[in-house]
Image 1: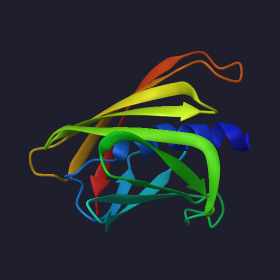
Image 2: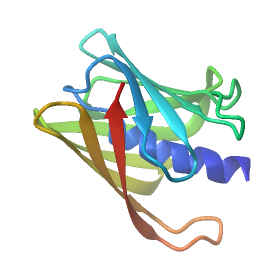
Image 3: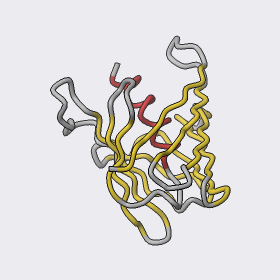
Length: 148
């Protein structure tokens, strides 16, 4: 179950990385798992941290996921609770409003995400394409993130 939750977060994490995301806090609309994304500048790239929201509505302290990406399409290691994992993300900025990301787990492609930012920069639309894994079928999902 923990592996499944991390995999779900990884696709969302991959989708979120882009140059025009304003630093600050983003909240995922509805769906499961509920998440908060914190974006901070990191040199010429971004540091993106995800926190899952518990049943009590509060951010959980465990399974904190972080990645630093330069948005250049090169793989970056995903950290969980500050420790490297066998998951990577390769985030490529397409233009000022779009990115595409490839997520790999143990060197195998797990999924891709396409992100589009709204004209006012307050909403992110993310289309996730997830490969089949752990007995789960491949699927396509769309999610929205709101700037707080």
